[in-house]
Length: 212
Image (cartoon, rainbow, N blue to C red):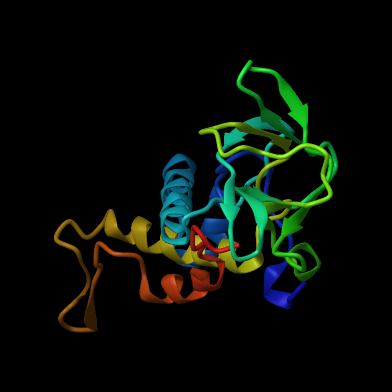
């Protein structure tokens, strides 16, 4: 794991990626005397902005069932199941439903991208082995995957990006017209879009749906 990807953060789907105390420390004197509730709200809002930019979230669920539609890749001659992020095989089961509503376990599959987890990333799909005794049939929502979905740790760069965006949002409270500072020392326009440095920081974590 890279130095800037230190594992941090609480579990749970779509959590805040930092705390109000961490934001106060990040802002230094800029947060002196400010409400902890408002700091936490800024962090929560920034966390969801990061999610939207990345098209994914970085929390972790307890094992639960979710439903997907398998697609047949004619070039690879494999059934492919695109899933939400996951990074552990513990408790993982994959089932397909038949026309009678009966569920059967797909016993042989490969999580992909193959080397994702060893590179501190996550898997985003399952490829069914041709030797499997049970196959999907392409039925809509005909695949049931039980897994702990999400990221086991919040990447350090995601936390840093959240704090940067949260500090920008917090400063916006005192700038009703979207401009911080004053003409004597300089002004900064607080744009509605994600901070450019934040966008660059989280770009490597953006999910391109359809890529497996």
